[in-house]
Length: 294
Image 1 (cartoon, rainbow, N blue to C red):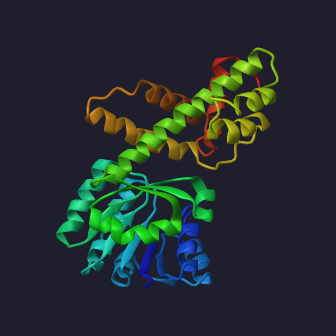
Image 2: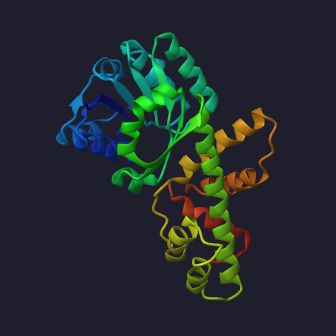
Image 3: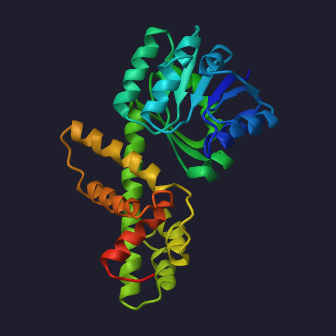
């Protein structure tokens, strides 16, 4: 038996994720703040709802993937929000990357309306969304997780139940810390190689086959060399995630020195008006410190 699924947030990630659910045979009802995403999904077989409350009334599960904490709060709890379409058995899955604290607050409010909530942020970018190979990190109650596992398995190849409400968001922030610092390491390695007069393509080939290899080295370093800064994931979005990581760390008296550094280096790129570029543009800040011309 397939679920009736509501999907809210039809951007770069949401649109292909919703398509995969339609392909899997789920009756899918969609809503988005702008028309292009809605029209694209209707063409794929989805039905349109007037607002998030209507999405919830017509669905067994509602999924959101939107910008930040205020967006999730508005869609879930605001006027015509999911809470106004609450009914027995409804499960709400937020796949955005937002504050763990805000996640828990929303979950508590929805629980009062007998709606179970799972926080289930993802990693894998737009290609993972298209291919259904995302890594999905889930927080929330065991029963709700098991109820939704078949849906997660349509969207991702790795699904991990991380713990109670907010745990998925914490794990996603850990992912973003690791990704950002690895990106910085690649930028520094590339800049060292160029400044020392060695062919950086050969460095990538050699290091990429050993213990220093990483997704960032193999995928972002060639883009840095080609001066290709088109976004797979924008600096502005990375900075939002790092702000949440640093705020979460501050709340538990945890110093994250490396994360603070990379956050400031990204801020230097943003100050140049380049926050819409891909995260590989971090290399520009490192090059500038090294007085190295592109």
